[in-house]
Image (tube, rainbow, N blue to C red):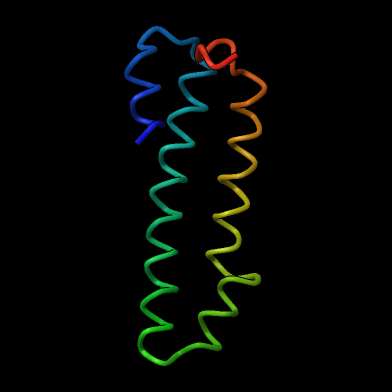
Length: 83
């Protein structure tokens, strides 16, 4: 995945940038766990519960955190060699 590759390509990051990237990787992992839970609910016939997660539950909360952290990363893109 590009996130892990990008971090590996930039081992010397500022303390702030390193913390931001670490946070993004953790949030991204949480996002996938929440997405798997939503998929499980839908497959088990709990469609309303799955929809609730997509619209404002844990999945939506974590998704929004990942988006916000990606926005912060975008603002620091030059430090990551992403300009």
